[in-house]
Figure (spheres, protein in one colour):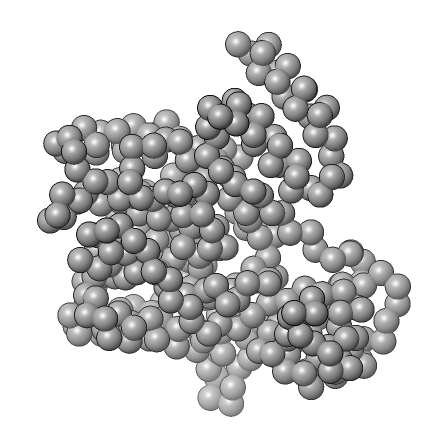
Length: 364
Ligand SMILES: [Mn+2]
């Protein structure tokens, strides 16, 4: 059996990036509905009838404008009428506050199954699927999962689908990182964990993966718009296939790169991002001629150009993530190392590790 997966749709007009046409239609809403439609066409083409959202269908779960809510509700009502079974796992953005028992998705229950409490389902083929809505309390998450495991006979395979903030994931600027993230190790008994929340498609361990958001959503998502779309889970061999969908991109670049684009030298293999269909932010320190750069980037295909003259190129945190394992020493040491690496040498690794280890020692 195959299950269609999408995560982090964040359905919202995003007026800071959208254009409003003469008919009053918001281009961002238009893009999101178009991508969703393309996703369902892909599912239909493959004979997939069960679609699971891995959280954050909405951007603002405590107040969505009625017109926009009705649009996405009507979209899913039609898909349900066409024979799709739809399950929506609740993400933090869908909840009135992170971990809340109240979610905007409750108003969609006439056309989808909404999961805001941990639940599991046994499929055929000796597979159990565990549904994990957004929670921040690792003990609660762990307890739920252990209860779900214990409720099933031994020897089955376990797939976790959820919306969680797991330690070690790369995050875009502006993404919500709770004070306490979940350790991937609590899913050691799972055979596969597929998550929403962080928007970058990435693997934390051979078993634990973020499938990535349906589309790029902000400058924090810059640089990998070719890795946005949907995922297809095969419950027989536990394989995951990604299908990319064409999303508006975000790019953050220096004034020098921007000038290279303007003079027609944009090419990704030269390290200069292609700005076609992108919303571009140019970061500069020395004064630049904004008008020339803006006109040039628009001529090169950018949708929209903004400038940030006060900060240097956005530093994107990249973490070489991995499950802390015995072979790498204590988990804390590995995490401190990856954390330090993500700052590109700005921090003193040795000193931090010795401080961290001393703290761990004094705690024990
Ligand atoms: Mn989220």
